[in-house]
Amino acid sequence: MKSFITDNFLLQNKYAEELYFNYAEKQPIIDYHNHLIPKDIAENTVFENISKVWIAGDHYKWRAMRTMGVNEKFITGDASDKEKFEAWAKTVPYTLRNPLYHWTHLELKRYFGIDELLNENNASEIYDNISAQLQTPEKSTRGLLEMMNVESLCTTEDPTDILNYHQDLAKSDWKVKVSTAFRPDKAILIENHNFADYIAKLGESAGIEINSYQTLCDALLKRIEYFHENGCRLCDHGLNNISFEEATEAEVSTIFADKLAGKVIAEKQVNQFKTAILLFLGEAYHKFGWVQQFHLGALRNNNERMHRILGPDTGWDSIGDFVQAETLSKLLNALDGKDKLTKTILYNLNPADNEIFATMIGNFNDGSIKGKVQFGSGWWFLDQKDGMIKQMNALSNMGLISCFVGMLTDSRSFLSFPRHEYFRRVLCNLFGEEMKNGELPDDMELIGKTISDICYNNAKNYFDF
Image: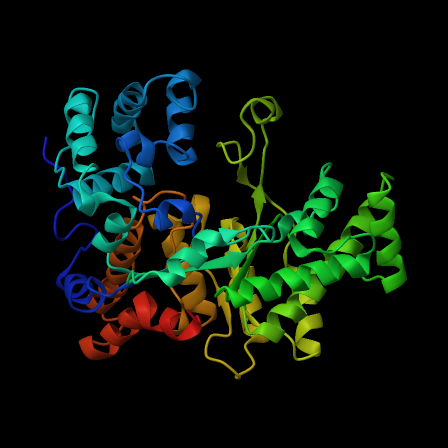
């Protein structure tokens, strides 16, 4: 059966169509946060088959397959790549109304010209077709990115990374700009059982023996300098929520020393350390002119049995109901009070907190920079039609959506970039419906400029790539 991904997919009236085709569709993509593997980009990897690039690492698909009763052998186990693809194809018809159904068919059509509904009957044929296409030069990692009109992208690396692949890419003449984001979470999460081991690794990468809180800060600053020298202009933090518990420098130093010595530290001490290190990092980011990002609200590794078997990032996370507003406000206020609050993007995973985040950014937009503090796009469980609309409605009602820096993939997959198209179609339809209803003026130039800004121009001006 023919796919439903038509030219006017998600565009429900003439206004939406004109906005999309004239102001959104052809805008280049700035994907300012993802988890692509730089090695694959630098080496221009050619994937052996569709499962290698589409099933491997995709915990969205894995969760759906598990729900359908698919044995783990056909998800992360030792089944053949073709068997894994066929297991996914058999699952697809049951993903109706899940964003996976839209993404699956959008990606099949945009990258491979497959205009059929994927199911178990055509799985083998489609697997062979796409796997053959992947062996052609235009379907290498770089080719896939070029197909989607990607202008620049930003991967995410730990402070200990040597950034050799980013260095290789910087020396190449490839037209797509590849940058990185500094992700120091392992140096912040002092409650983790392997914290001391990580601190030793961080010290080695910085060439500093970390034996005190001050030398920890020295090592982090040295790595920030190294990342900056290699083109980094963003950082990212994936935390449950923001901690804010004040402490003296002496108290923080004692907490850090006790942790390295193997002592148990109390919850208050955990929060005191996290507060101190976030403030230190925040001031450093401001010094270097970086954009700081906070992804807040995920409850991770809920299934302890499967976490022991498969490890993190394998599909056992969900939305958390953490308290966010007060401590987030205190952290931003502490940095702003010293005039050291850098450009900041806040991402929320709990839709119940959308209005909290949408109003929080207004507290610290001080007129110095357009859209200095941003309410980031719908993230993870919320990067689907309903989640994106709710985020944009909250931002529109309580802030200025015209300043919004738009969509990102936050993905590990080289086939996820049609999500920018998905977002743009949803965005255009949102505005188009209100134009049709007379809630917005019938002024295509005015509305069209706003659409172009959200899709591309705002991000182009906000990020220093």
